Length: 495
Ligand SMILES: Nc1ncnc2c1ncn2[C@@H]1O[C@H](COP(=O)(O)OP(=O)(O)OP(=O)(O)O)[C@@H](O)[C@H]1O
Ligand SMILES: [Mg+2]
Image (cartoon, rainbow, N blue to C red; front, side, top):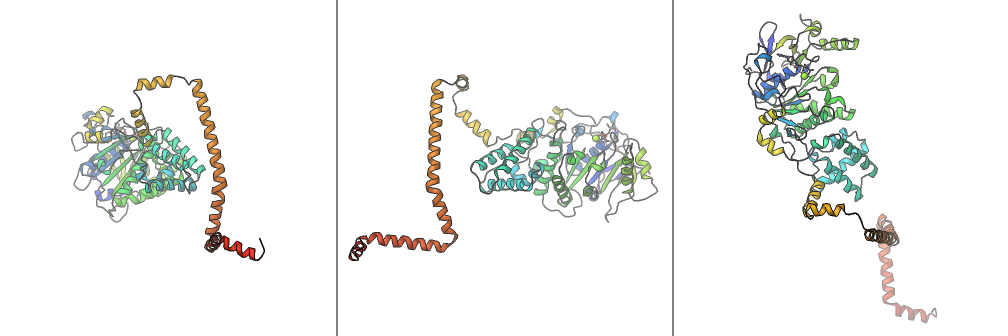
């Protein structure tokens, strides 16, 4: 690596091609058909940025970018690379306990991203916000999805003012569906802190490819960085470089409101020193607003089979400045590991496209095993995040378990069927409960309802209270002086 930025390969005139740090502080794109060398280039960039002290986070959807912890093998290497094969220090995360579990606390994340994720309408969204604000005011931590379900249950039960029960039920159903999809493991405590994400980090999502976690986890990570990092303005190098391999997953299942939120975050996160590199086969998988924000473009060969594909290729070739290089032809026919590279210069102009033969990574291109990844990971991190703290319900259940008699006895009690007396006693209890509830309702209706109505009637116009006080005073005076009044009435011959 050069002092000014990562060296990525050799250009057509035989010079080392490097990407200045300053231009890497904007978002970038690595695109190309399958097997053209995108993930290897991502690996080269991640290695060198990490060497230069930039914090790197790689979202590895297929698990084939796992090789950072092992040295590259001579036989798999592109001989042009000027550096020796070597392993790097890397930490490996997963969702769930396979590697170090990556978790986010819902309380910290807030309701907005979750609402968008659950495709809530505006009424449901405001109900969720109300629930979060109730939790905040009452110092109630809502870390995992179970905590959220407990909170919503409680608010429904106590008929919390302002909450719409049918909206809350819909939210609960959607949260349950999210939990069933396996996302429960992504939320809870201990939640990841930014200090744990220093250095080179890989989120291995190879076991989560079929579910939504592939897009949910990066969304929560971006939001965390966005919320917690201070404003940096125009930095001369990124503080965090985030690589989204198979970036189409980021937007694949997202509804419009989630997509809009992601676009807003991505547009603004650059000023916090975060650069995002999208690695994808098809650039049209990315929203137009994101494509227009990209600075560095590394485009490998694009196989085109349809008219639409041809139009796409034309648009891509047209996004580079016109020079002697026929980008369109190159993009159709370059071999594996060769790309067209261009970036934005200091004045914000796209630099002339260069044909670059990419270096091979210093670390292995092989897939490494879970054991190797775990061994390479900082053991303090593994210890810190290993055990998920139980939510409120689970803690309650644990306490009950601890207070109950020894397990054998409990088992026996459970297995014993209910007796006839249990049935009669249960029926009597239910009857008593019914009678008490009915009496309670009659009492409420007879006493509280008219009382409440009178109170509301009085409160509407304060002068009515004055009249009531005067009337009560008159009644009191009459009661105290009743013998006098009676004498007076007798004298008048009225009684
Ligand atoms: N710079 C390179 N030096 C040496 N070999 C390379 C290089 N780039 C790619 N290769 C070879 O090409 C193979 C495919 O590369 P890579 O995994 O990066 O493709 P990809 O574009 O990410 O494909 P996919 O879209 O399927 O993930 C590698 O396993 C390696 O054998
Ligand atoms: Mg790849």
